[in-house]
Amino acid sequence: MNEVEGIITTKKSIATEKRQLEWHYVGLKHRHVENGAHGEDEEGLNEAEKAMMAAKKRHEDEENAKLVSYEEMRKKEREAEEEELRMLKEKQERRRIEREQEELEQAEKKRKDEERRKEEEEARRARQEEEKRKKEEEKSKRQQMSGASFVAAQGGRNFIIPTKTEKNDKFGNIVQAKQEMGMTKEQQEEAKK
Image (cartoon, rainbow, N blue to C red; front, side):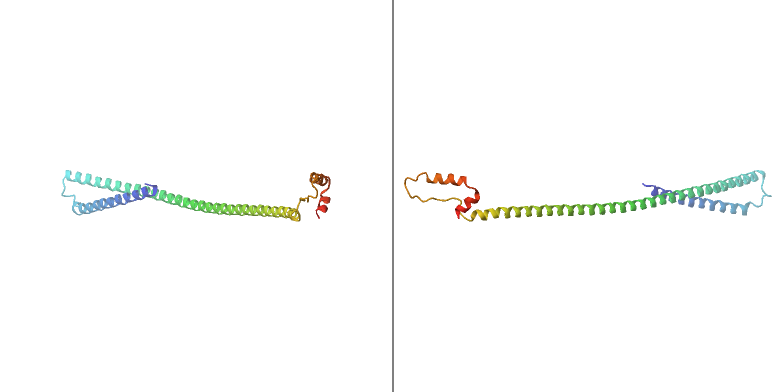
């Protein structure tokens, strides 16, 4: 049971006690009125009856004093409880405001984190695209360079099959290979043409 429910329960018990005191007070007043109507004539009473009347009156005065004292005490207690309840409500309101503030701060932090995450994701994608573009450029450059040499290589055969003219010319192919080895590339290309 939290503090507010405890105070509400206390207030209910105070209200019940107040009703009981009011009934008691009404009963005392009623008895006083009845006694006043019958007891005003003290001349016909003997000494014992007078003492009883005085004791009864003293008892009623004590009861009235107790009632007044109790009412004052209850009033002070009620004021203290109302003050405590007011302070609890203020504390509850402060907590609610703090909670709302914390929720706003959390939402702002979450929004900033989300923005930062999106920016990082976009930067990562941009880097990947840039790397991919560079790789494509390098690949196309390599293909162009190797393609040019490949096209030049396909221009003609890089070997020659000699025709046999004589049977004695068994080593003609070897002699020709030695000659080609002694030539530069430019000379070899001219010889092919």
